[in-house]
Amino acid sequence: MLEKDFKELVLNIKQEISQTQVLIMSDANVRLINLYFKIGKVIYENSNWGNKFIENLERELKLDFPNIKGFSARNLGRMKKFYLEYKDEAILPMALAKLPWSQNMTLIDKIKDKEKREWYRNEAINGN
Image (cartoon, rainbow, N blue to C red):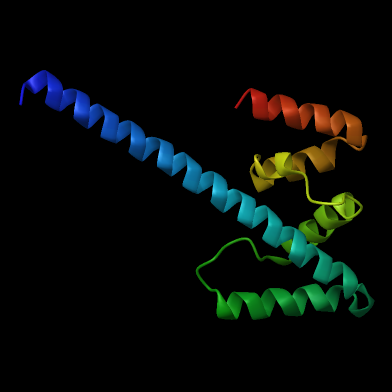
């Protein structure tokens, strides 16, 4: 095999690996956003327990998942806020899952108008 042919094969394999890594991360983000939406719904549906519910939930999740970040009382409250923003959608917009959690929350916190928020979200996605 010629060195040139070998280098081309290696380059193709590296590109496949990189593309697969991007797809894996994208799929993971979709699943994470959906999980946070579902948790937000549960928190909202149990609002009658007050802040104690979130505090107790935080404690229980940290006990069972000590190595996973993202289940602080603050973030659980943000999950509820996220759910409340999008609960009336027939299905959770796929575009939401294309952005990381922190960017979704920044858009919700800073832009109250849903149409403007959608425009900024689309611009962020298109601009990578």
